[in-house]
Image (cartoon, rainbow, N blue to C red; front, side, top):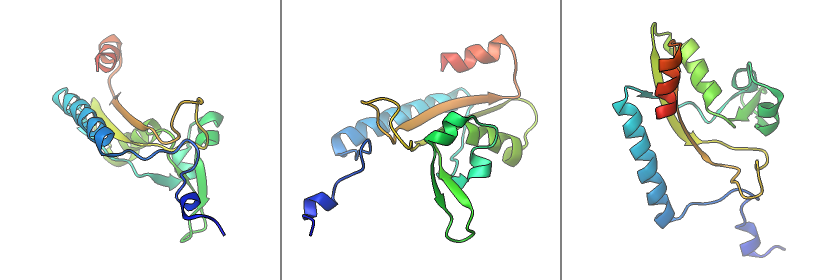
Length: 147
């Protein structure tokens, strides 16, 4: 029979964030999202899981390997926990929002990797970012890089 402490272990590369660090992380997240909003970027919150045919559509083999997969108990279809939010935001722009002209979107959320990308990296980091759709050229690139 296992000891109760053994049952409280987290998987390798998965960490909990305790109050002192959590408040610092949240303040930084909020500051960045406020900056993105000031630049005209609208916040979106993609789902944590999607069916893999949608989640991995148009992505490479690397993202497929980094994606944790499971079977949806309701439909029997394969689902994945996001390993990158960027493709989800692109899907939301193309299929859900369908706006014309430039579309500025920002996001913040946790992702999950099947294995860490390095020995010191978390398997469940927070990913924050901005995407500028429908605008081409150097000025658009500079705007995103400045943020």
